[in-house]
Image 1 (cartoon, rainbow, N blue to C red):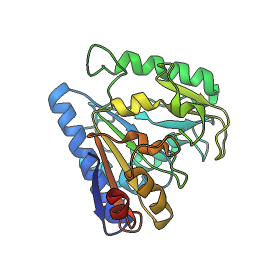
Image 2: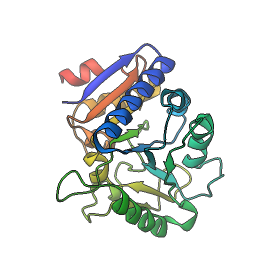
Image 3: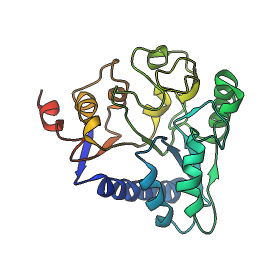
Length: 244
């Protein structure tokens, strides 16, 4: 069900991911006239963003969203927006995408409410009901199995309120206050690309591929829409996980 592509090293994984993202954007624009892409934070996707910038001449029909954000200012070194601004937006020449930044400086509850309203207003659902359907959600994974700001053992993982975005107040990684897209929104995306590199993520990735487990939030993304792109170091335990 989940597709796994294994590349030799982080550079190859980043290049492969960039091409996959570009293809998804092209298909969305051709079919619906607009492409909605949710971006991940952290160090792993930085190189993919740098490479992605040159794969489209015209970004004018693309709208950028975020899977999560820290409750900091836009220029704070911890800000996912700042990462994207430096690695992707600064490299784009010509028509630029519309970037929808999570206003983390407002605090978790207010930022989550504002972002939920914006998503609902701008992104169509795939059917009559359900959450807005992003065209692609790019995500990463932590060594503990978290994705976006959905952490093991935290209530946001099993939230059933129907909220599109959730406030997070006690994240185990600093800063503790964050905003995250809900699991139903991530699962509703037409495509989901999980980019994983490094031996430190091997155990977490094996647990994702072993099957859904609430203690491994990234494993709850599993569906026919999920494409895992990993380097050989991260995928070293993948075969045994899928056989178990």
